[in-house]
Length: 474
Image (tube, rainbow, N blue to C red):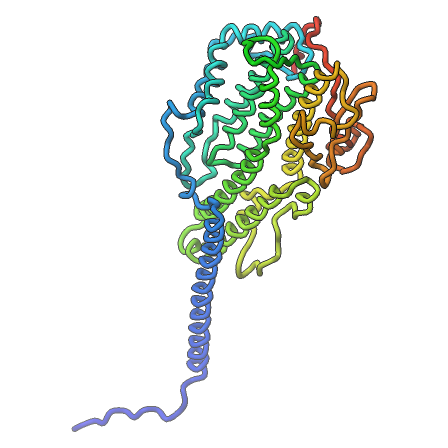
């Protein structure tokens, strides 16, 4: 007996199956939309990244970590190797007293300063001579080889050269107290060379800041010694007065600001590279798969945004003075892109370095100091040719003593203020506030900077018989 198969039911599907089918379709569409959005997000991220890199390379700027790969320089042609050898030698065979000596870098020298500098010359004179020999070498390679994460790069030579330059300054001041200004001027040139060497790539902002501090040692050394610098026209003497050729050479180096501007620009290039390299790396350390794959564009765009703003920060240092440079934004821009879709500050707020007013002020304060030091040398040459009298106007220095008169960088092209007839002759910049406060260089309570940046033109006492104050226990 045969049985026919049961017939299909002729009633509709239960409602619960219709709802499940509807939600399945909706869910599939949402997943497809999210996958499409992620694909678009990744492509947009790559487009912005490629555009940033292409723009940097088209302007001859380094931006990727591989752009900072340099061929090593043999030690016999490497000024950095010579300087590091000399700097490390200064830390060897030091007496306990010399190791604890705290030199203030100012005239007059006290009896302790004189004794410590004499010991330095006795034990490390050859090392200082070796450091001077680095000036004959044209190539500089500090041996920095970058790899991800760039944040882990070590720059031990910064503190080494800073200590070497401080020692050079102390010795040069001591030579001035002995009337050996030829050596004083050579000491200035040693310090300025070491500052330029610190700007050799790869450079970061910290390298530029240390270079600024070293350059300041050289310019302050000039400002302290210029008012009574002994100068002769002959170029044959090996000791004693400085030669006019030496003074003009130092003046030329002080007025050549190309290394300062290049160092600032290269420092920002290094920071920009670090942002592109460090932000994705540290984000990858925090996220596991599949979260990293999903959110990678967010962090890469965060690095692109921070690197873009760092690139724009270099434009501040292309301006001719602080007034124009200070008009640029002093922090990273926010809110240009939709935060949810394109970019966040998740990592850049911790890792990125933005333009700051303090950095600008240090940069332009150094330029003011260097220009003032060059003018002080020009004034000294004038005084030596005019029976010790200072000129009535700074313009009288041009063209015989200076090729041109440098402007006060805290103004839009105006010259430095000059008071030759005051009880204490002075040269001064109007400083951060941009106003002439009649040479008021006193620090006001609650302010970060004095009203004016004052440079004294009066000779300083060279040596005091008072010993250094005994250190107090902290």
